[in-house]
Length: 75
Image 1 (cartoon, one colour):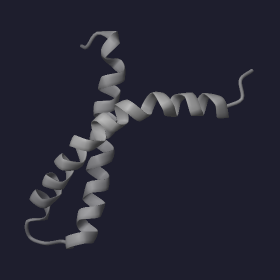
Image 2 (cartoon, rainbow, N blue to C red):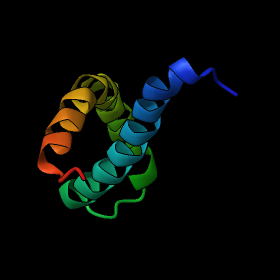
Image 3 (tube, one colour):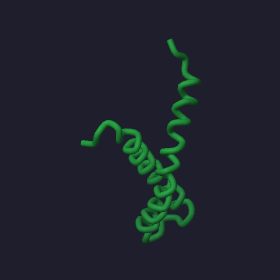
């Protein structure tokens, strides 16, 4: 288990990993089709995407939370 103060970083790591995995898969499939070495091309694209996605998510998540907080009705 991780300490509570690691929660935002762990959230960003998991979210960016999952989203970049899916998007890289779709993008790779559209770009190269179902080629024999598709899985290795996909994983390579995913790792590159994740390298960028993780720090971006860490930077953008607090801004997004503030925007959503302003858009949601509070009782």
